[in-house]
Every structure is written in structure tokens, then in C-alpha cells.
Amino acid sequence: MSTASQYTAALKALLPTGPAWPRDSGAVMSLVLAALAEEFARVDQRALVLLEEADPRTANELLGDWEVMAGLPDACSPPAPDLATRRRLVFQRIATLGGQSRQFFVDLAARLGTSIDIAEFSPFYVGETIEQPVFGEDWAYVWRVDIHYDDDDAESAIDVECLIRRARPAHTIVFFTLIPGGATAPSLWYEF
Image 1 (cartoon, rainbow, N blue to C red):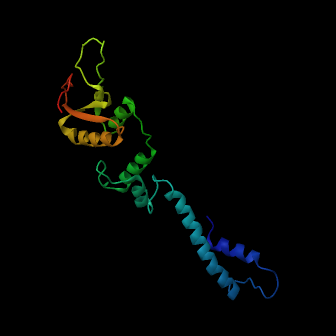
Image 2 (tube, rainbow, N blue to C red; image 1 turned 90 degrees about the vertical axis):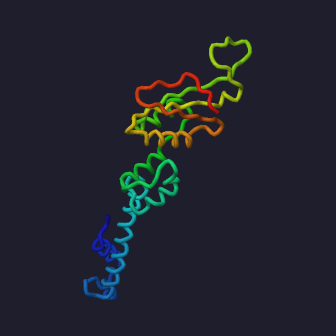
Image 3 (cartoon, helix red, strand yellow; image 1 turned 135 degrees about the horizontal axis):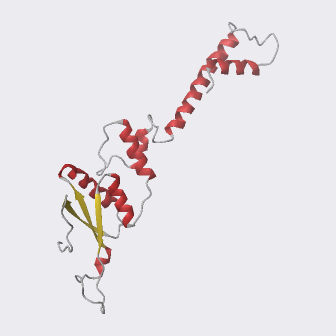
């Protein structure tokens, strides 16, 4: 970053030579150049700040714009209490790659400190042995998420449900079961 005095010296060096272009500090020309140099130094400083604002992890002035771009706050992410949390939420929203795999959703829940299991259903086809419930063709697009939680982290189970609903593939239907600590997931699920 260049200072005002550096800009003043650079501007004076660009002046033509001769008595009509005085360079002493009290001359009107030097005072005009010093005033211009102040503005150049201010713009230089603002350009450096803009570099910091270009990254949501270090943004201050543009953090609100980053939040609008990322769609925050939303139903799954209420307003953050502090600057660091706001930055983290924006960065997570724009840097997290989406996915449709089981592991993507397991990792999504793990970021909130919650453990989940995913059950997928498949339709029954003629000729298969009947060793499990018989589901129709529409069940190919249905899955169940079993959210394991303890009484002290029931709130994060709600957050996980919201995030999974938002990230799920649009053509699918997802059901949730909340499983208190130590309990096991139901083997079948027939509620509609």
C-alpha cells in the first residue's frame, strides 16, 4: 500500500521541469498534488480492504451482501449471534458441494454432531421372493432418515432434519424418525 507522501513524491516526479512547476512543499502546485495524493492513498487502502471483502471468511462490510447471496439466514439457519458464526455459515453454504449419496447426508449430519442412518425402500417386482414388505413402484423414491439423539441435543436433530429436507433430491420423499439415545431404529415403517 502506498502512502499519501509516496503518491505526492510520485506526482511531483511526473511534473515537467522548469520554473513554472515548483516542487517545494509550500508551493500551490505541491499543495494541490498533496491533496490529490491523499485521495489516491485512500483509494489504495480501500482496494486492499476489497481484497479482504472478496472472501466471506474475512468480510466485514460486505458480509451482509454475502449472506443475501447465500440465502442466509433461512429456516435452517437462524440469524447468527456473532460475526465469526455469520462468516462460517456463509462459507459453509457456498463452499459445500452438494451430493445425493448416503455418505453426503451422513456427513451433513455429522457436521452438526448428529449421527444418522438411512433406509431406502425398493419396489417389489414379480418373481422376487418375499422376504420384506411389498412396496409399490413409487417407493423407489422414498427414503427414511433415522436421527440418533440424546436429550441434550434434540435441538440439533431438528436442524439436521431441516438441512436434509433442503438438500434432498427434489424427486424424492424423505421421512424422519427420531431415535433417543440407546434405542434402535424400526425395521419397517408404515406410517403415512
